[in-house]
Length: 455
Image (cartoon, rainbow, N blue to C red):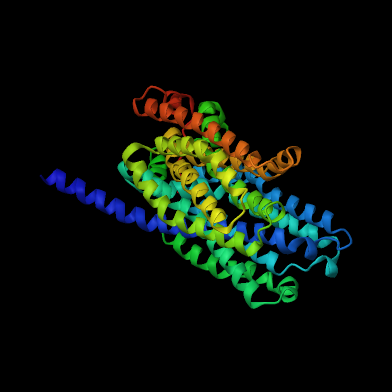
C-alpha cells in the first residue's frame, strides 16, 4: 500500500510540474508564432511599400514574399545549432536563448527605417532580421515539446506533447485580431506610415513574460539523468543521421501535413480567396480567426486522445480524414460565400489538427533521449522549409490549371498521403523501440565516448 501511495503521489507531483513547465513552453511557442505571423500578415499588406522601391510594386511584393520565405529556409540551420545546444547544454537554457533572440529581432523590425529613409540598407536589414527569426524558430519547437514530455509521466506524454501546439493558433488569433483592431481604428495612411510598427513592438512585453516563465522552470529530469549518467553524446546532430536516419525521414513526412496544411490554408488560401474568389481581407481574417479559435478546444482534446490510442495513431487518423475531405472542401469553396469560407476554415482545420496535435508525441516516441532535441528540431525544420514552398507550388499549379477548383485539393491530398504513410511507419518504429528491438542508440552506446558531466 505504501509503495502504491508513494507512486501515486509521485505521479501527481509529476503532473503538476508538467503543467507548470508546459505553460512556460506554451507561452513561448505562442510568442514565437505571434512574431512569425505578424511578419506573414505584414508582408502581404505593408512591407512591399515600406522596405522596397516604390517604382515597381509587383517587384516589391515579390521581394516581400521572398523575404517571408527566407525564414523557412534557414530554419534547418537553427535546428542544427540549437539542437546541438539542447542535447549538450540542456533544454531549458536553449529555450531561453531561442525566445530571447526571436523577441528582440521582432522588436527591431518595429523600429527599422524604411527604404525612403535609408535606401537599400532597409531591405538588407529586414532580411537579416528575418534570417535571425528563422534561425531562432529552428530551435524553438523541439525544445518546447521536450520540456513538457520529459517532465511528464509516460502515460500522459501524448497530452503534454500536444499542448505546446496551441501556440500556433494562439499566435494566429492574436495577430489577426490585432490587425483587425488596427484596421478599424486607423486610417490606411496612418497604418501604412507607422501603425504597422505596433504589433512588432508588442513583442517586447510578451518577451518579458516568456522569459520570466522559462527562467522559473527546472531542467528536465531526462536531461539531468543523461548528465548524471554521462550519456550525452559529443555530436548529437551527427548521431541523428548515423543512428536513426530512417526515423528522421519518417518524422519529416509525419510533420508535412500539420505544417503544410497551415501554410496552405493561412497563406495561399488567403491570397487565392482575394484574387480568385473575391473575398476581402477582413472576411478572410475573421474566417481564419474562427478556425484558430476552434483549435484551442480540439488540440487539447486530441492530446487526451493521444494518451489513449497513441500519438502516431492520432497523426495517421488525421491524415486519412484530411485525404478524404480535401477535394469536397475545395469544391464547396468555389461557390464563394462567407459561410462556406468559414466552414472551409473549420473543417480544413479540424482534421489536419489531429496530425498537428499528435506530432510532438510521435517524434518523442521514436527518437533516443540523448539526440531528441536535435532530431525533433531537424525533422520539424526540414518539414517547415519544404512547407514554405507550398504557396508557390500551389500558385503555379493554379496558373497551370486556370485556377481549377481542385488544384489546392491536389496539394492537400499529397500532403495527407505522405503523412499517412509516415505516421504508420512511426507507429511501427515506436512499437519496436518499446519492445527493445530497434533502439539503435542503446545498441551502439558502447561505441560512443562518455562525455563528462558539466559542473
